[in-house]
Length: 268
Image 1 (tube, rainbow, N blue to C red):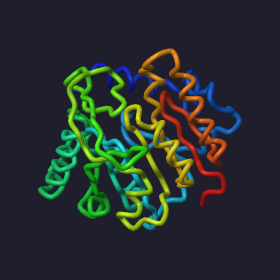
Image 2: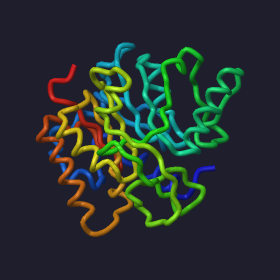
Image 3: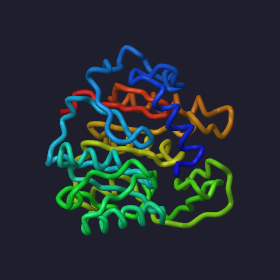
C-alpha cells in the first residue's frame, strides 16, 4: 500500500503537465526553454517516473547514475529495458537494498515482483536487464565521508535524509561519495544521465558538480523543499541552485511537480 505522503505526491505529480504548469519550480526558470510535451517521454510509474527527451541520446554505451532508489525503481528498469544503459543505482537505505535484492531473486525464479508493494503494478525486467544494473549501498553527497541518514517520521515511508528534512532523531550511518569519486572507482569517464532523489542533499551535490565540472548529459533532480520546505528560505535555496546549473551550461527542459529535468547544452 502507498503511504499517504506517496499518494499525495503521486496525485500532485500526475495532475501537472510536462511543461510544468502549477509547479513552484517554474519561478526558477525561463519557461521558453521547456520542450514541448510531444518532444518528451515519461518512464516509470506515476509515483516514481521521470521525464526525459523523446530523442534521448542513450544507448548500451551510456552510463547512468541513479541516486535514491527506495522501493520504486520503475524508471531505472524502463531505462535499461529501452536503451540497455549501464546502471549505477546508489542507495544505502536498508529497505532499498532489500527491495533490489528481492527483485533480483524474483527475476531469477521467474516470479513477478511488485513495485512499491503495489497489488497492481509489477516490474517488467528480465535477467539480461538486471545484468546491467548494479545497486551500490552508498549515498551521493558533496564529500567523501560517513553521514547520518535520518529516518522519516512515518515508519511506512522509505526515504531517509542526510539533511534531516523532517527533524527526526533516529538514524543510521552510511558511507557517502562524491560523483567524481564514484566515477573513478568504477572506471567511468563520463555520465550520460544522473538522477537525484536524495531527500535534501541535492544542494551540496549540485555545488560539487559545478565546482568539479562534471555535468551529465541529462540531469534529473527532485527538489524536496518544493513539497517539504524546512523554512521560509526554501524557495530561495532552490532558485540559487537552479541558477548555478543554468550558468554552468544546463538547460531546463521539463518540470513536473518537484522534479526538474535539465539537459547539458550541446550534449550528444
